[in-house]
Image 1 (cartoon, rainbow, N blue to C red):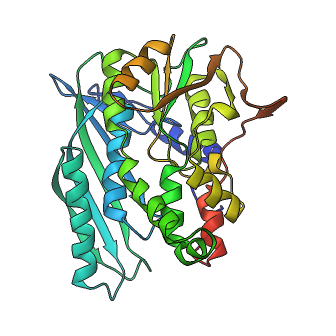
Image 2 (tube, rainbow, N blue to C red):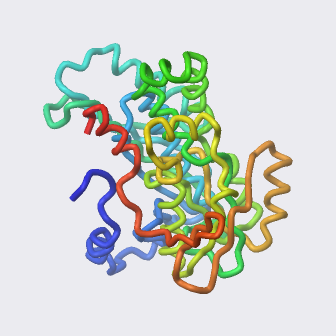
Length: 332
């Protein structure tokens, strides 16, 4: 298999191994495009998710916390606790671990969640530090949001900008090359976009408002996330390329590296489906959250992106463009 996520057709076969429910408390189970599990333990629902950081060598602690908590937010769940596993290569020094722990502390405080445990190990099983975060949250019964809930006629809303996370990662990977091309200020501005990768605020607002589905956009980019929404819901969708917001810094970096920003890892934006999205847009704008209606869910099966007069089918996600970029530097 190629680097990146396990292909969806293979993953679907693997998940069928677990299609026999055993515990009545488990109310949300594994599925393509679903990032969280939900448990009914009495009172609020307990929501759990887990995510590794494998595509970045910088700001791994900050990314790890935010990406896991973004998953919770896509279910409408408030982050509470974080379990962190760090696997570090032989030769890692104390300073490197302290750096990651400071990032974890900063990010956890930002999302108002506690680090409640984990595991730290030096091992020859890895050649660079791998971090995985399990996040635990809560949501009131009746407020749990899934990816599969989208319905025909729903508006598709995208918050913030596509490929923000990828822009940050690439600004570190290609720092010297980008500085030569665009200057120091451009690269430093790109790195500072890291502070914009949390979608917890909009996730909780949207869940309280009442939406049919949410999906945070990560590996595979906006196009990959759109395909997953269509796959999970069983319906098609139609979006307009010109309505998908992309920052100018992102456009310039992606053009320089010949990669597609809509297929680039995109923590920092959320896909939301809702009937008549104008009301939710108004709520977001009142709370200083950028959001755009980019298309609609359809009653068919195909996922389509319109680019001018062209109607292009959105196919099963391929490996993220980040891995293409990493291969240019011999990092894969």
